[in-house]
Image (cartoon, rainbow, N blue to C red; front, side, top):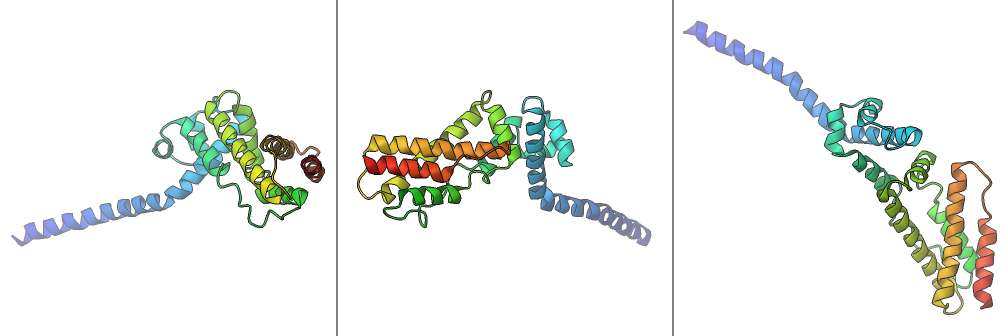
Length: 216
């Protein structure tokens, strides 16, 4: 009888010894998962910029991230979901910035310049991500739609700044045209940073826009 009890106790001890490392490993994996998700996005960003979205297999992303392929699919069931996450998390369309601290009544040019600085379009996404956006916009509707929403948000925000800074009520058509002009210059600056090229004159553009609105 004692021998049987001793054998049972021994089996229980062995089960505890075997299960405990496995439990610790599972806990460690759970704790590491948020970091693993970021590594997946980092690896995907680099690979998409280097080889393009279509030419990058998920196996390569998982390998570069140092995670099992199954974990990649746990977070991102489809490869396009990785691209969507990069756009949503690293190139946000809202909120862009608040007009508080940007607008000063009667100072349209200064308000536009402060808007550009607060937006910091050149810093919202890495140079690598900008490469992905310009490469994939022509072939992937998700990217085109993201850029459309971003541009529309910029236009609406710029119009709000113009309205609040102008000394008098603005004609809606001219306000929209002025916003389109200045947003185009801001986006051009963000794109120029991608190539380390000469930057457009934001201050000069702001003065021109201001002069055009005040003169009408």
